[in-house]
Every structure is written in structure tokens, then in C-alpha cells.
Length: 169
Image 1: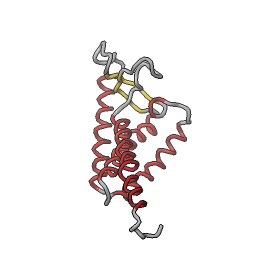
Image 2: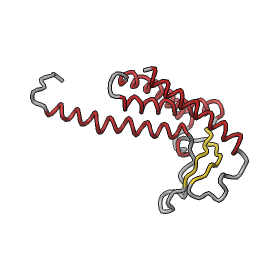
Image 3: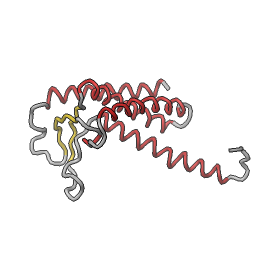
């Protein structure tokens, strides 16, 4: 389990280092590169949830996030001796949570700085600005849910269909 927690710790360090850099290098300045349309580094303070969504009050979001950290530790402990994929996914989610939650509790906002263009025919013209912690959470969710639905779920279907398996439910 320690190796997975070290992945989380590395993500937290990289996240906070890049946020510090964004504050020093980007805050109060025009985005970089100037004229960058597809990708740019653009300092932003996110006072809401992921992707700047605001339909849940922030005290409730913070409470749910702290509760989710407990659940993440529990799941990581449960998967630690099984397949590596869900453990790495959970480590990424945990690293992302520890990247954003303290910042939200201390500052009241999260520093974001990655900005990508988005096709105008969708809901917004630019993808919401994000950071390393947001990326870690999303990558972790893809790894974890991909395992649960496509690997673990498939193995459970095969096991359930095997008539020679007389293990009681």
C-alpha cells in the first residue's frame, strides 16, 4: 500500500509546485503564449467545484471530499493485494484530492492554469481551466472505473456463468 501512497504523495508535490509556479509566473499577467488558441497557460482562481460548477454549496462539497478521502483509503486497502490498475487509479484520485482539498479549505479557492480550446458547438467555447490535481482525479477515475467495469466485471460474469463453481453466494 505504501507504494501507492507514494504515487499520491508525488502527485501532491507536483500539483502544489505547479500551482506555486502559476501564482508566481502567471497571476496578474496575460495568458501564455499570447495568441494561443488551442492550449494556453492562464491563471484562474476556482471558487467552485470541478469545472467551476456551483450547484452544491462549498461547505457541503468540502465535507463530501473529506469523507471521500476516507473511502479512498478504504478502497485502496481493499485492492492493494489484487490487480495493480485499480490501486494506481485510487492513488491518483487520492493524490488529486490531497492536491485540491487543503487549498480549498485554506484559501477558499483552487489555483487552475491549464486551458484548452473546445469546439464552439458544445456547451462552452473553452474547456474549463484545470490543474494537475484535477487531471490526476480524472485519470484515476478512468483507471479505476475501467478496471471495475471491464476487467473485474467481466471476471465476475465469467465466474457466475461457470457451472462448476459451487461457491455459495
